Image 1 (cartoon, rainbow, N blue to C red):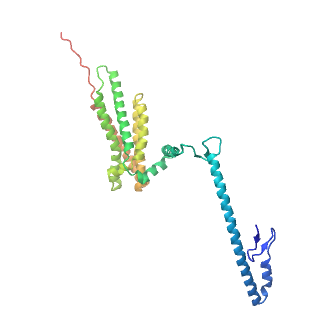
Image 2 (image 1 turned 135 degrees about the vertical axis):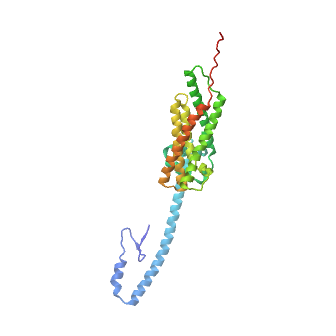
Image 3 (image 1 turned 60 degrees about the vertical axis):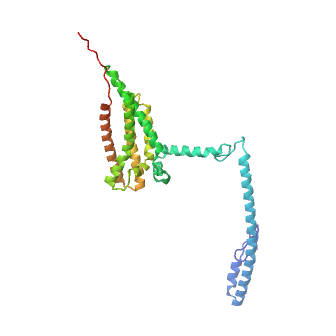
Length: 310
């Protein structure tokens, strides 16, 4: 491609340098008429050279566009039809017949693994996502079902242990145990949200309702479900360890719930710690009360003994 001088527009060879500026400096002491004439000539040369340069630049850009377009088309055809099998890969993109089903599946797996890989970021995302500001019915329903099943198995296992040590006692009615399990699951699913709402009202003086706090409980119920499922797997073998897992799950759910509300209502670190401490204290007190009252309400019938008449 031809080279031109930037100042005078002269066509140059491959390694040639134009000395027009030096010549102009040397002849700068000449008359004004000659200077004006030379400037006019330079301007005319520049205009002609710029026109030639614009034409050559347009031609060069057109050639580059055609070359890039042809190379992209060849790469696309090579990625689509090349390879050793009918399902070729372009980078990490799967171009087989099931490509449409891979994207939703990968998105679902990424969302699920984020609860374990980046829990803090996931809690913040769920709290600030406007699409998530609805009552999480699915996590609440799953927690209620599995928690009711855990309470039923836990008290049934405790009753079996009591009757095994005392042969004069009968196991309690399964229907009665199921009723208490239903009430306990409903109570604990509701009391976790109620405690946080109550403390926000009296300690932070926020104008929020119970439903507002419930709308931001998705992350807390998701993590609670993990603890409930873990406790449900060992309730028959080690009921006391299973009970400890349930308590730890509720404590962690309270922390996650308060953490979500911190992002939404811009609470300070002191407010977060106050809410966390008082929530756990109130929940422990209610749990102790329930653990004292419920076993007393479960009736364990005694085997009637027949006295021989002498």
